[in-house]
Image (cartoon, rainbow, N blue to C red; front, side, top):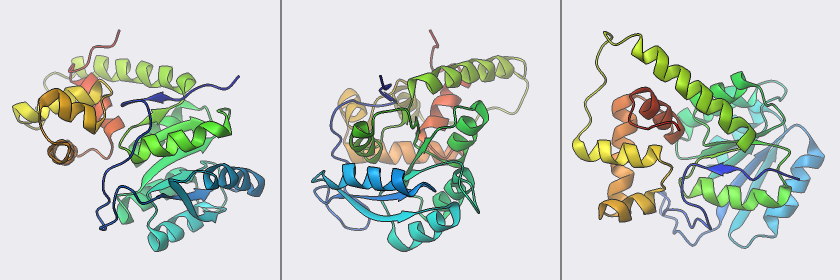
Length: 246
């Protein structure tokens, strides 16, 4: 039995926002696959190619190729392994987020090590899925991440929650540290909803504002807090006690 990835956002088919390069939301989601196992890449390509709203624009076999192809092809979503020759997926993730910040990166790996999970999130990954998930679930994962959600395999989610709790405890022990950057009241509301796992569309409905306004708030929050992803924003929210862990 495969595990269904947990979503830090809305469930269901995610149409995705209009791209900043002028493409419309109806355009196919452009996906780059990077894995050092050719058979696995081919399997992913076959599954994704059968989806009308997804287009596989390239394949690579190592971290260096991932960085080069991402810069050349500007994918919407990258599916990338962690353990690869020449440059690891995490190192490639850091480089890609610097050169193509709009790209959403999902680590698709066999590694269930805590360190890899935490480093991937710090590097800016929007998802961390174990290869034990059914390959048929990958198209929905692509849509979800493209739509602004964060995905993580259930067996890894518990490790994140444990780390969140540890971060919160360490924060208590350092109360005298420099105060956190000031967020506006509206930004605090948005951050709390992001931490609860709501997607941009759901946040917009909750606060009676437009989806574009939500995107602007999220961008401002990440810039002010010097974070790279919504997942890091959740870590911050737990540390600052804006999100209760039950």
